[in-house]
Length: 387
Image 1 (cartoon, helix red, strand yellow):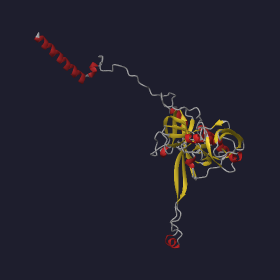
Image 2: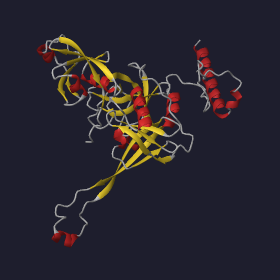
Image 3: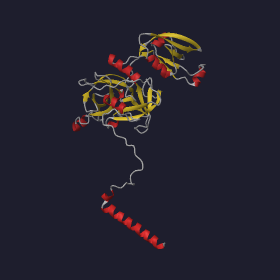
Image 4: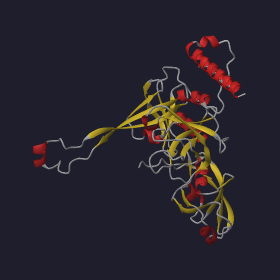
């Protein structure tokens, strides 16, 4: 029995050795044998669609980006800045030795931002702070085309401006969406030229709506987003998942100068209204009655015997203003404007600004605890002084 086992073991060893030699030196002899080294399951392979096909990838916003990108432009500005004069420039002895070389010096300061082409006629919407003070403005498309631009008009109080470039080519134009139907959580894309690196698309969601009391603009109703917005993005497009314009990127909250996930955009509803007035009239006309207001705190509500903090407390009335002529006095509390309730001082400012100058509107107030109404002839809001 032991001898038979030794013969079997030697036979198996010889067979394995022969098989190893054949597989190493003549593997083709074994090609007809079934292989056990292949995969034990089939792998599903994704076949890439050819470029330009209509195949959509789940979760991709490439279609929205490609739809809006051609209409977003770079805005380059330059401004001549005069330097300080030497304190002794008027001294005759100093001028004898040095001449005018230390007189008032001038140099050019450059800036950058973004803009959105809104019509085939060459109108470009951007931020006022992007072009403020510039004496030369150049608009560049992502494909390399460059144009000298002129300012059609601006509105510092909403931080918007309209430029115009020659319409010598068929200009790509962005499609307007609706900012009024946006919801917190909607996907949005921010498109612009951050830090001058070139056309850039970032994505995020709508983080909040109706942001105000930020001290950025006089009229504030911002869309807040966590899509990365950085210096150079100002004036660029905030678009929805369909590639439609829903806002103009304007500002960020940052302690470092870069994006921290809190960016603000002007809703397209406001931007469109301002743009149309600028194109039609060269500027924006707003209503005004000449009052100074302040927020109603719980302490003020108690001292004025108010049941809540809704409304705006009139702290001052400009002499000769429409409010003064109508009989409004400091200490009155404005409750509604033209039938629309006044929630706070910011809402009151927006409601009055929306009224048409020259027409009469009804105001509801509380005076000494009693309700009263007044009809006031609306004036035209003065142009704010330049800082």
